[in-house]
Image (spheres, rainbow, N blue to C red):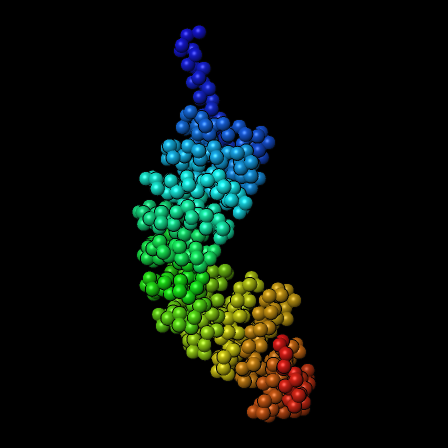
Length: 482
């Protein structure tokens, strides 16, 4: 046999390996092929190709494994159990950029499924290799490494701490300064995933100088980047007053308010979330947002969107109103009651209605004047209807009940109280009775019980009589919580 014939055998073998790896990678991109590949033992067949002498075969095999791991947890676990991860990363520093991107994809695809799989990635010392990739010249390699680190960090504080201990945070801060938009997005997202678990982890991100660089990108025209930037700042600000103040000191306001008018729903939501995480801490931070024109911007945002996008804005108004009488009045003056009332009627998700009820309760609980503004908006009958609706969740009932109590205990606006005499159950009615039974309002009760009065039905008249009779023992009636 000639030398040429011998070499042809090896060339055919090389082509066959390349064709097999490419074919599996293509099939792994089609969900309908996954079960057949699984049954054929594809993971076991791909493993030796990671050590192939041909770089293109190695990177294609890694790509195929990444697509398989990305599909479901069972395949990701099979890859880990097959001992592929150490093999995947053993020669990573010497590999070309295509292989590095494929390897980072495999690590990300495995880590995303569960904390246990993310821990398996950490245990095989993948973090060291990902740090090397973060230092790579190629932006695509950095992006792949950032993405994998984010999927590891998002699961728990322990895993996030492991990512921090590997020295990734300063490198991620450098990544958000790179010109490539895709890299900025992923690096900002990973910083957000690291920051969310604890004040200590958030402080590590702050100490690396992340806030100033994130603040500069709020007005970037790329919507996906703005989403991640706002999310990262929110995750930092949520933990403590000091961290929230550091975010505010980066002069992000009133720039953030423009995000509440963005055409992208997630930019709106994340912008409102950032404001919420700041105002919840102290009256002073809430007052700063009010003085900057933030409450009007949040109210406009609630009125211009639907569904869960409204939720952080609703909670922002509740937090601001809860702090003090003056801040609550600022919400009222900015016409915040009407959109909150609309949320009770328009929204179908119970948790959104519950948030709106809670916010209205915080607005109305301070003084007679605050309660009157809420009552004039015809909120009380809506809250009562939701409370008595058998389809309402238990949490929604609790929130509406508490809101009614908060408002009724301060409300002296009789026109709003009268309808509740007809329909309110005893545990709500007792707070209506409490207001009617006060000396200035007993004349109103007497007027209601006159035989010629047409303002109430017979049941309402009977309740009014009960109110009058109960006035002497009212203290006993309202002692307990609802």
